[in-house]
Image (cartoon, rainbow, N blue to C red):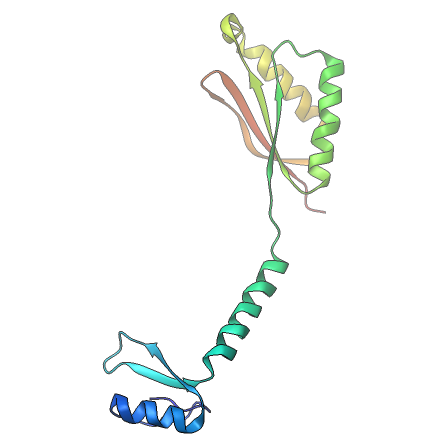
Length: 153
């Protein structure tokens, strides 16, 4: 048993431990149930839960959530449309999000994988100084996928 100030009170029966905690006006909390004998501590459990909740809220404030946004292209996407979608990619990167660039193939377009790679190469050439390629272009079924992350500044 551990006292309210952290001092060891030794091994004692449960009834005596509960009486000691009530005498101090605090709660008896089992800290290590798997230990032999189980370890209990005298503490204000409501205050303990409140402080634990505050610590988790502080930890949540400091973490950043990174989302993965997706921009889709086709092998026949025109230059103007690529420029338009590049602005979207830059906006996503400016928000510190990752971008998944996808080239979708339909029907017979799958025979021209090189056109899809050309689209990804054009995107990469435009953004080469602003992005880090997290996942180089790879084929997954009927799609070519590349993941870009913002450069740390």
